[in-house]
Each structure stands twice: as C-alpha cells, then as structure tokens.
Image (cartoon, rainbow, N blue to C red; front, side, top):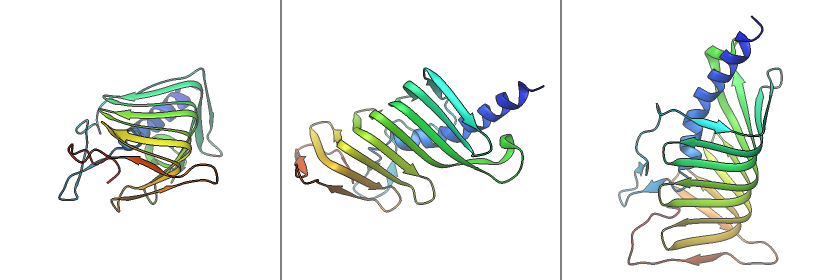
Length: 187
C-alpha cells in the first residue's frame, strides 16, 4: 500500500503539470492582431505529457517535486529541456490526488522551451501561477522565425499581453525584427 500513494501523488502532479507545460511551452504564446491568445500547438489540455530525467525527488510535506539531470518534458509540439525542473504545488486537503495545483515552476541550467516555430532559451526560468508571469534570466533569448530578442532578463506577462526585456551592465537588449513576416514574437 505504501507504493500506491506515490503513484497517486505523481499522477496528480503530472496532471496539474500538464497545463503548465502547455503554458511554458508557449513562451511564444502567439497574440493575434486582435489581441487574443491562440496556441501554436492547438488545445493540449488533455494531451499526455512525458517527462524524463536522471532522477526525481519529491517532498509532500514541503509540497514540491523536482526532476534532476537531463530533464525533458514533452507535450505534443511543446518541449521544455533543463538540467533541473522543480514544481511547487498547493494542496488544499490531505489528499494530493484530489486538490493539488501548481504554485510555481523553476527550471535551471541550459533551459530551452520550444513549441512549433517558437523558442526561448535562458540559464534560469521561473513561472508563477498566481500572476501567470514567466521570467527568463541569464543569456535570455526568444525567437520566432527570423525575429529575435535577446536580453539578460525577459519577463512575459501572459494575461496582460505584454513583456519587458532588460539588459545588464555588459550587454544591451538586442532585437532583430523582420517586418515583412508576421510572428508575434513576444506580443
């Protein structure tokens, strides 16, 4: 019976993680000219998610699960790669299977997020579910087709349909934009 609880726990975490992978996989959430969000990969809310890593650790008391070493999380066309992927969750009751939801996700080390023709890379990425904000830090780059933006920090406010790209003391923000091709790189 001790084995059943971890299986239920993992199933619940992975199901809740499903929506988040879709969101992170859509760093290039594409905004149409009308300003409405649309997914490159279509509706993936029920699509299976597959995560592989060298190791996985969980702490139900502290409410997190972490995938360590060569992490690859895949859902249809969306892929997140990193050296570490840590998911913090909230549990409203004692049963992890019934009431868990994602609070925050942290990806560290060679982070790469790809969906369709959109991609983002960084040393570190943090997604907070309460405000639906994704922050990419350290050698951050996001591109769609021939359009590229680079900065030390890229903050994507997914509900507000806007973003901020910041430089550091050594390098400025850099943008390459091809106006002849529509893409919705960040907004």
